[in-house]
Image (cartoon, rainbow, N blue to C red; front, side, top):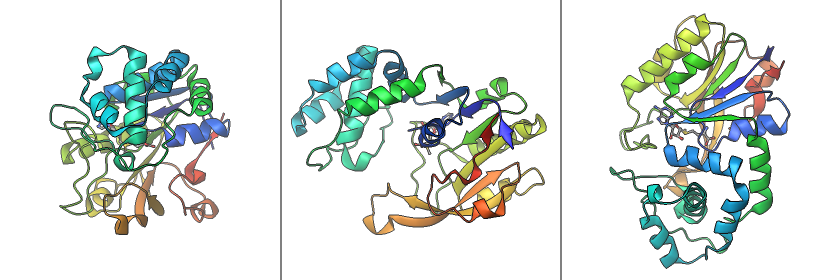
Length: 270
Ligand SMILES: C[S@@+](CC[C@H](N)C(=O)[O-])C[C@H]1O[C@@H](n2cnc3c(N)ncnc32)[C@H](O)[C@@H]1O
């Protein structure tokens, strides 16, 4: 099986995109997310990476500096300053978490790293290279309906349905992502399937997701995934997640599902 363009409407850190890029599987890509600061970081790294590197190189690794820069309103900074702030907070904040308060302000405490690598110049330049010719948009996931054409491939990694009431960690964006959003996302997947667009979606192994995708359009696979971000250290490790596809996944490849970003569901670029 092969695909034309690649779309990732909940791009986050873009783990799958960068893996596919490394494997030279991407011809054209559209990456999007509703988090405007994140998207601006992508845009700055794509379009003015040397400025971002220059700003980051002036940032010290100090707790007081962390809180000073955390307090700054990102929308009063220039694009490269905003990106440098985001990268710095992400690399030096507690456990690499991203969390905002109701006003949309980043509120993760200072992390206890000895020497965090927030100025990884080589990597930033490589990321910038990977993003050249990539369309980067701050839009809600539904926009993919206007962009994806038959033969394209869309990978959805939305905020997950919580495993329990207490694991309510779905508020990546100040507005959260509730059941209505999950239902809308399922409807988008059906519409894309009708239009012969390949879709892959990951989510938690929950009854809600099994029932939302329990129709003839989709195949549901269980995979073992690494859970690196959990405030409870004991809960870090491997758990089952679901991967939903609207195309057949080879049995042999399904057996390789021991890491979250295993490319078992990867199609080949046409
Ligand atoms: C689970 S994370 C994606 C993780 C990503 N695959 C990675 O490798 O880091 C979910 C992402 O969805 C974004 N998001 C939340 N609601 C959204 C919406 N309605 N439309 C588009 N993106 C949304 C969040 O900003 C967040 O970056």
